[in-house]
Amino acid sequence: YGHSLSSYTENPRCMKCAEGHFSYQCRKSKDTPATCCNCRKDHTSNISGCKAHPSRKIFQNKASTPATSAHSLVLLMKELQELTKC
Image (cartoon, rainbow, N blue to C red; front, side):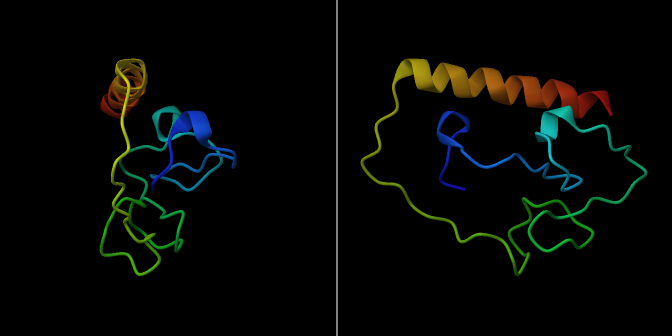
């Protein structure tokens, strides 16, 4: 949380299976339980009720440029397309 793909320096971790790839690249079937990359329990890592969930930060005065917003939208659309393939 609080980071963008362009500034991310760590290896990616899937929010569905906790493996080393982006979520839109995940091949986990719908029948396989999710694995949280924060606590390794059987839920996706975007669940706010997870005790290991990173605290949410409020970013103030952060201006987004149209190019940044468009890039983010493209990434989200790709992930959505991949998620609906499962």
